[in-house]
Length: 317
Image (tube, rainbow, N blue to C red; front, side, top):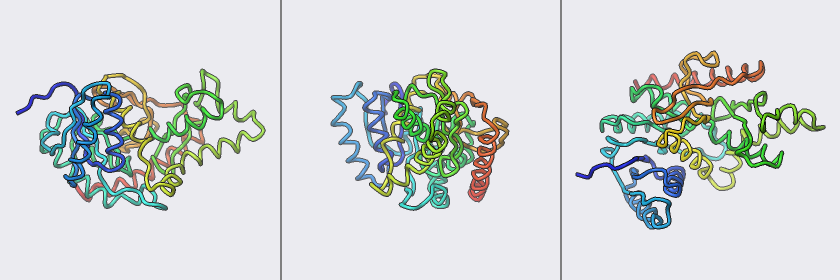
């Protein structure tokens, strides 16, 4: 029997997202042990060998192995990337029925191992599947984290960074709500070093049109990428790696993840993308942004859509 040393991350699903996430974690030296699980054992075995061959050039000598659900027993983070992928022309919410079946099985297997860590959910529709993971696992709400709007936020900051000629990291802006078609750009609080981006954009001759276009580009980015290359995976993999680092390094950093609301933003019993403090305990606090009236109404609409789809989870309880 081997003894666990240091931080351990288990990735379930070695498709494009799962393996890109594994590659990001390995490259950043985030975890001491990385375990890959997939129904296609031949694929998982090959991916493990390929990753191992890069360990020499990684920041730390991460242990990479193929595993089973038994490996989840002492894992710090179990990231679920398995499921049916989004196809061209398909919305994320179209994926619910098939992926709920997959998650019911996966979460049951993980919990049967004695898992006491944090679930990180990447599979779409991520908000609904985060809610399902919370319900299926019985874990406290803070220990189930969906990738939420972390990718949408990255896309927004990238667009705004290009528009104002600053690095994306210098942009303080968030996309909130559903990771999907009802996602909201929180323009009222977006800024660079305290400079209101909404005010700056509104002063431009085409400012309103520019804000509309940026929001549409961010919202629809996945559709155009999927049409061009079949799937999105690098951006979300980097986002997942960022969440993982926040957890394992106890960083108390604010990230836009899918979290359970219990009165925040005036909403109840819904997993949805919001800024939240993430550390070793998981999600410890929701940050309530001071939204304007339009954004508040849009957020309420987005939460209502997700709650409606969350009702399907009860069929598996």
